[in-house]
Length: 67
Image 1 (cartoon, rainbow, N blue to C red):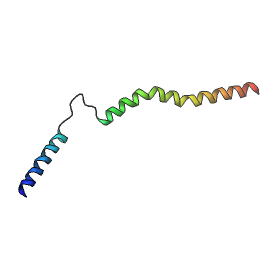
Image 2 (cartoon, rainbow, N blue to C red):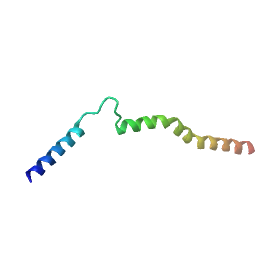
Image 3 (tube, rainbow, N blue to C red):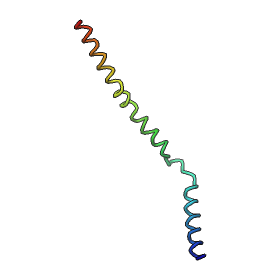
Image 4 (tube, rainbow, N blue to C red):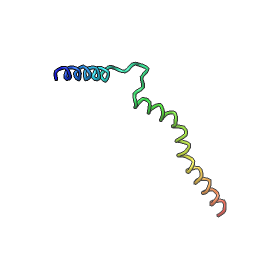
């Protein structure tokens, strides 16, 4: 049973070493990746957010001209 325990301990030590190893400079964390994706989509989202406001303003102008 001690051989199995030693093997499990070595596997655990290797696993913990890989987890605790610092990331390289090139590695992206999940939050950094999400930040880049949000910034890439920001202009499209802003346009989508402003489109209903523009259409409402056109509608209001048409109603005002009709009155």
